[in-house]
Length: 219
Image 1: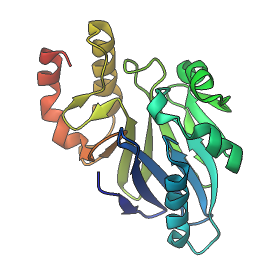
Image 2 (image 1 turned 180 degrees about the vertical axis):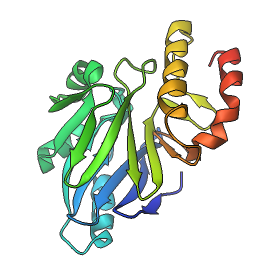
Image 3 (image 1 turned 180 degrees about the horizontal axis):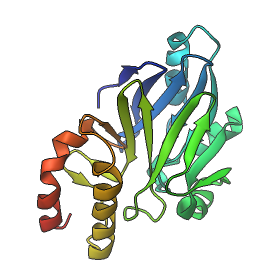
Image 4 (image 1 turned 30 degrees about the vertical axis):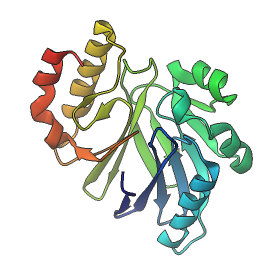
């Protein structure tokens, strides 16, 4: 994935891709107060340092990383979480059903367990939490609405071309596709940007025509 830079009305969004798994890490920076939210401290703390530093010029006030939101518990999305919590003291957020897995995998106690419909507030920035069940029990997509633009940080639940891996489990696949359909495609506009945990950005409109095909193929 080429690095993303979105210059929205109230925030900027920057990204970096790290590790042999090509994990996407995202950073949301408030222009008004400099508060920052990191989404998925996946790996490579020096790369995250560079990402955070790159956003220091996005606002005229001093920036500070105040929150780290994790999309789900899988090891490749949490490898730098412990180190980054220790070094920054940032408040941590994750889906309630994945809290135990994150504690076991990263030795981090999540400060704010999240349910569907909750919000994550960091400074002046507020993101909506969408619980998408199937890839993991507690996967959360974080939705940012800013100046007419909707950005969905989908983790490993929605990608260009399909939903996340459910290990050929028909029940988990149906659960994930149902949630993605009703909680994302039926709630947000077609021009919503989808920024996944790996790979390229897409939009809901680009993926919507394929929902029936995904259901038929079963993955």
